[in-house]
Image (cartoon, rainbow, N blue to C red; front, side, top):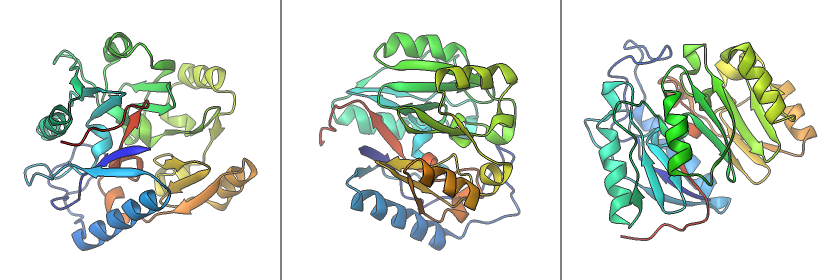
Length: 273
């Protein structure tokens, strides 16, 4: 798979925009860069293509590339961040894709949409999350912009610790997702179980200590910070292999592996600038 990432050169907790962030907790930048670089190396060793967007010192959260928008074939839909602290990031990603010949399809600026933070996909199958960051109205616009994307369900997030869907749910393959039920309202859990009968619930420890749903899947390998033995056994039973990738520094800001990558949906290759 093709992915875009941004080095954590200026990554720091300079403001508080989610329950995980604390101005009194500092990021070890050297360790963050080491963890990020190791993750990049694992992705490349597994056959992924990884390109990079240059960081901006004014954007301490820009390393969380997965929030910047959504890429489908040769279309880039940039995010409309609800929080003003992250708005400037979008310009850099938009310019990166525009320079490589991608069609830019922005949403109306009045509609909040936070990219792959709230769109979880496998192939052209996707689940959409709303309620904390992304506006439900963005779903209809997204369907119009990318009709090929099959939205299986839209889930309302009710726990702001899971401000993005990617914090509480992940596709592992076409018919399997892992998710943390208390992050959603009851109706959403019912919708998810109907849409994906193979939905596997994770424990509070997996969701909040390890950020296990915020993972990256390559083939049958599930890359994540860590997980409980119970979840590891459940995944192995389904023929997945757990690959730990330490993310201690990024979890301080409320993110993990999935947040660090903007993954391409569809088959259109990136065109070099």
